[in-house]
Image (cartoon, rainbow, N blue to C red; front, side):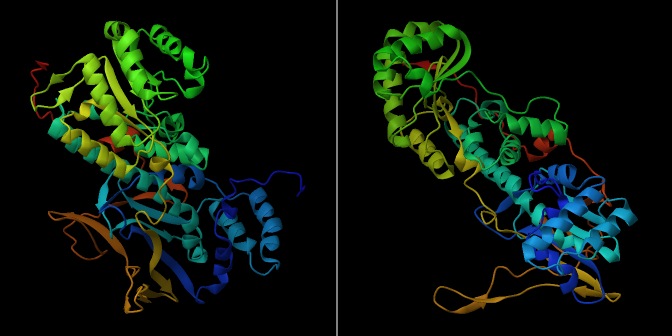
Amino acid sequence: MNNNQPVSQENLILLADAYKYSHHKLYAPGTQVIYSYLESRGGQFDQTLFFGLQYYLKHYLEGQVIIREKIEEAKELMPQVFGRDDVFDAAGFEYILEKHQGRLPVRIKAVREGTSVPVNNVLMTIENTDPACFWLTNFLETLLMQVWYPCTVATLSGEIKQMIKTYFEETASSCTPQDIEFVLNDFGFRGVSSVESAGLGAAAHLLHFRGSDTIAGSLLAKKYYGAERMAGLSVPATEHSICTLLGEPGELDVFRHVLQTFPTGIVACVSDSYNIFRACKDYWGGELKDLIMQRQGTLVIRPDSGDPVCTLLTIFDILFERFGYTLNQKGYKVLPSQIRVLQGDGINIDSIREIYAALKNHGISAENLLLGMGGALLQKVDRDTQKFAIKCSHALVQDQEVDVYKNPLELDSACNLKQSFKKSKKGRLKLILTAEGHQTVQEDDLPEYTDQLVTVFDNGLIKQAYTYESIREQAANICKASCKTTPVLV
């Protein structure tokens, strides 16, 4: 291979942890089947929302993924990784190419995407269907484990939605799904590690909300989940390069230009370039007030610095004084529909909780506020947020069924010996749904319950695909209107 030729990043043969290339020799002689499962072993949230597997199946595993050119590429590169030529075995991949026309002889079962499952339950299983490819099951662990990312973002976004729903039910005029779907907006594209992460994370967030500036999520939803429309929507908005272009003396002129450029609909304007409080009091609530109130739409004022709670409470005090407010039926203040506030700086699940609690304590309805969340939504998560793991739980060795598990003893911080939470499950597993919720049991147990794990991939073919709309519906938390408000003018 020409050293100047770029190395393919889509060569599945090269998409595994390096140590796994030795496993074809290290498994016990006579191994025929390796059966492994995926679970969330705990973590920040009690439930995990399963999403994203279909992307990995369609993008990386479907169809003929082993071809001669990719085998030759690996044959040249892998000896360089180990400094020896007795680790990588091209024959295993050549066998898949010749016997299975390059399609992977594995079967993958998984819970329906969009399903929220309590932690410590099986979410997916994988096993080889050709005894000669026993090594393939856990070779694919490296890639398939990455489903932790869209699952975790979907779980986080869903938890925030539930929090928002609670505060809307307590303080807002109404709490329909439409009232909430644009409250939390994805600002995370620039804060993630790759375009692929942006697409997966944004698509996961959009299972719960519709507001997003990360177009990659909508494109992924359309390409890999057949979304009928762009899942994420956005609005015209400024950034500091716009608002500071004419310097501090020209800020008012920039604000006026923004309102005149978009005289209808929603437009957002960052307003903290110099003095957010002056901007709210003298510009938006002063010289530009009439222009704002005459618009057929909403101006969204965006602070972008300072302590979120203190800043927001001060801003709302100014805006209530300048624009007035109504009291909804629950007794909370609501700005005129022409004006709202968006907090996008310092937003994470903890600060959101603090902000809404502060607004409630000060008699301010949650409906006055929109949120933008960036790195804390799409990047500030890892595999241990929900403690994801793939472990072997069953095998066939020399025609003998073997239940496989680990049960490590560990020392805690006081050097006391205890059982580890990393204890794994054993046997062939199924996920059932009872009146008490989801439970993981042995495959042959409780036959009266239907296995919630369905075959989604079999020998190179997608056997079950889900539409994005159906996954959103599965993941939806129905938020019913809690009241009808009769405005009280103050």
